[in-house]
Length: 133
Image (cartoon, rainbow, N blue to C red):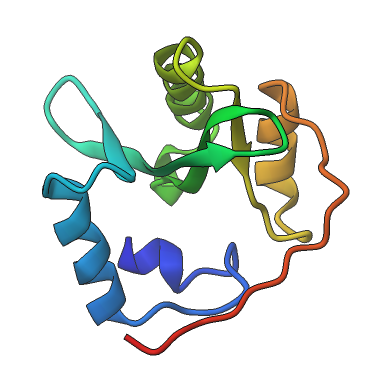
C-alpha cells in the first residue's frame, strides 16, 4: 500500500499512519471496508484491492467504491487487475447497485483497464472536506 500511495497514480501522498489505520480497520469488524489480495500459486503477492461500502441515494442501494486497485509493477499486463475487478463485480453484484472508482486523469493504463472492464466516465466533479484525526 505504501508504494501505491506514493506513486504517480495518486494526486497526493498518504502518511504511513493513515495506511496503518486503514489496515487495522480492514482486518477489524468495521463493516465499511473490505480488502482482497491476489497471490500466485506459490503465495507471492501480485496485487490488492481495498473497497468501501456505502449507500447511494442516487441509485437507491448499497454502493461499493474501489478505493485502491494496485498490481505490483513487474506483474502488470498479466490480467491481474482485470481479475481483481471481475472478482469485485461478481462478489458484490447481488447486494449492491453499483461499483464505483476514482482514477487520476493522467493514469492512462488504469483508465484503459477500467474501460475494458465496463466502467464508464462519471461527469461529476469531486470535492472533499477533510477533518484532522
